[in-house]
Length: 338
Ligand code: NAD
Ligand code: UD1
Image (cartoon, rainbow, N blue to C red; front, top):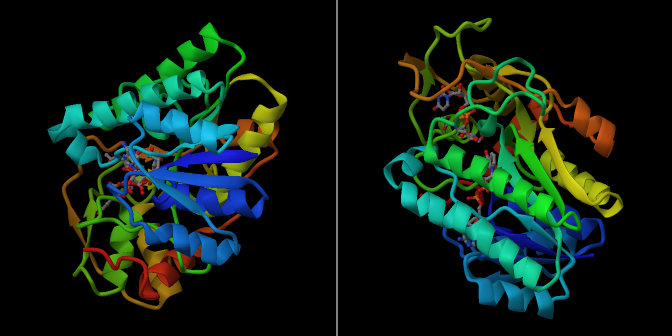
C-alpha cells in the first residue's frame, strides 16, 4: 500500500516509516519539522535501503494534504503529527487545540475529499485519566485528562467515533499508547527531545550520559511497591509493529478499532533507573522531590484485546528498551540537539 505518515520525522513516526518500508509499503512522510529534523528521513532510508520521501508541510494545510494524497496515490494515513508537551499545553492551550484537534479535522477532511478512508491515529492512555481499575482495559470508563494535551487526544477520539458513525465505510484505528521508550537497534533513529526532557526515560539516559547531574524522582509516597510511580513502558519497535498489525486488521474490517498498545507490565521509576544503570554500566544518581502535579500512581495496560484482535503482543524486554536507548544516546546521534 502507499501510506502517508504525518509526523513521519518524529520519534514514533520515524520508526513507523521504517517498519512500513521493511514490510514492503510505499511511504511518504509529511512533517513541518517543528519537533524533528529533515535528516531523520535519510537515516530511516539508510536502515531500510529505500528512499523515504519527505514533504515539508503542515497537517492543517488541507490543500497540500489533498494534493499529496492524490499525487502519491495514498491508500492509508498514519497520523502522528501533533504537539505532545503536557506542561506547555497548560500554558499554551490554543496552540495545542489548533495543532492537534485542528490538524486531525483538516486531515480527515482532506482524506474524505480524496476518498482515502483508512486512518491509524496515535491516541494515549491519558484518555483514561485516573484509571478506574488496573490493568486498564479498553472498556474502562474514560476519565478526565488533567491537561489540554490529554483533552485534545480525547476530543480527537470522539471526532473519529462520530466520523465512523456518520460514514461506516471509514476504517479507523484509535491506538492508545502507554509509555513508548527505546530506539531502533541500529542507534540511527530515536527520541530527540529539545531542551530538558519531560519524560522519565530520556531524562535517565541523559543522566547516565553525564549530561545532567541527577534524576529527580517525583514522589516516593505513592501506594506502589517502592512508593514511586508505576508505568507500562513499551519499546517503540513493538509499538510500531502494533500499528502494522492494526493496518492489517483494518484491511479486513471496516469500522472503528480501539486498542491499547502496552506490555501489560508495570515498572516503577526506581526499577527503570536501576535497570538503565545496569545495562549502560553508568551510574544514575537520583534525588527524591515532591510529586509532579497531575501524575497518577500507577497505570498499565490490559493488552489482551490487541493480542486477540491483532495477533500482536509486545516482545521486547525492559533491558532491550534501556540498551537501545543507550546505544542511541551514547552513539553520538541521539540527544545531539539542545
Ligand atoms: P514527536 O514530537 O517526536 O513527533 C511528532 C512529529 O509531528 C514531529 O516530527 C513534528 O515536527 C511533527 N508535527 C507537529 N505538528 C505538526 C503539524 N502541525 N504539521 C506537520 N507536522 C507536525 O512525537 P512522538 O513522540 O513521535 O509522538 C507521535 C504521536 O504519538 C503524537 O501525536 C503524540 O501525541 C502521540 N503519543 C506519543 C506518546 C509518547 O510518549 N511519545 C504517547 C502517547 C501518544
Ligand atoms: C506523560 C504524560 C502523558 C503522556 C505520556 C506519554 C504527564 C503528566 N503525562 O505520562 O500525558 O501521554 O507522558 O508517554 O506528563 N518521573 C520522574 N522524574 C522525571 C520524569 C518522570 O520521577 O524526571 C516519573 C513520573 O512521575 C512518572 C514516571 O516517571 O511516575 C513516568 O513519567 P513520564 O515519562 O513523564 O510519563 P507519564 O507521566 O506516564
